Image (cartoon, rainbow, N blue to C red):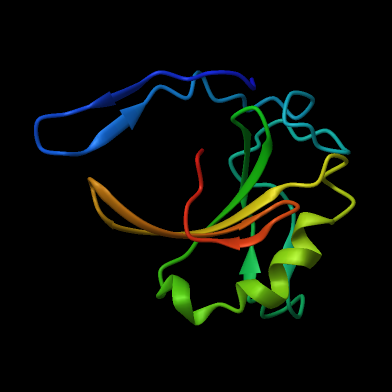
Length: 126
């Protein structure tokens, strides 16, 4: 969970950090209700028949996260508007970081994150 993490600087100038093992159990995240599979929980923003965002993955890296996987440009979503609503949703008793993620290649994804208690952030440590 919290504490000092070791970072490694690589020859190409990139830095990697071992964040530990992700936790996917609904009680470990934690979630307010039981989900057998947290890779896709029941949560959405927008009309029930045409949600803007839906079915995020939930995980804990020491703090709760909800990741909405999208095909569209992550910048096309109003995260500044949806972030506070989702962060404080009753399903997250400890609130949650909210991420919109677009996979662009097998090695690359683009993300935007609403960090609990901080708002939109340009850097998410987890």
